[in-house]
Length: 201
Image (cartoon, rainbow, N blue to C red; front, side, top):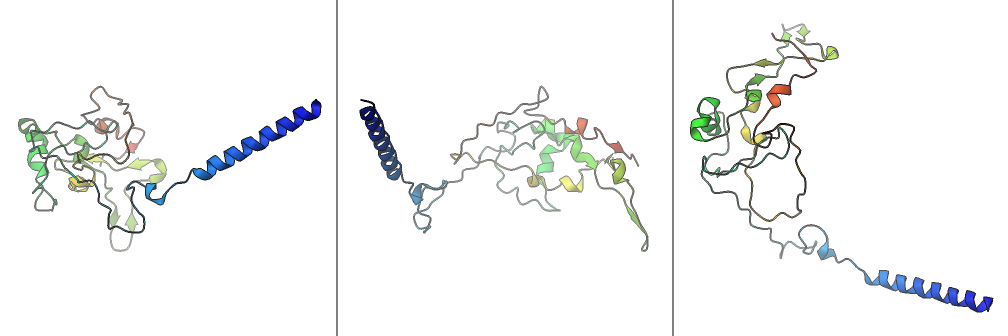
């Protein structure tokens, strides 16, 4: 009786192993199913991307896009046709987003953080280089300025128009804003100098 029980157990184990092996062998992954395109990886002939469709609302009429997280650069919700590229002689963004006119234009004003000079004014007299800050003391040289900082002039470094096409991968990220109106307003200028010994020169 004991031998019969062991034999039955052994047969059941072998049958289970065989079934598992056969099942695993049947599960194959085709090359066409790999990646985001779901087409052959050997030819581009039948590969077409989804049509890229940017917003067509005119500036001032579009709906604002929530920031991805607190103080994230806001994305551009309106049509930018004819506005790009930004050049030293042509920055149409500032025509509506300059703080002095933004409200009347229905635009988001450029924040105070973009009117700050972050570049230390080191000195070099041809022989001696003198730093204006001491990095070992966690010093920085930041001061408010009247005009838009040069480092912030090229708006599309951080701000980009958004497409309305289908996402290849769904985004389930949930933003946790630290300010009440953080989804639409920047507060970076309020905290930018926290924990820094700033030289106000």
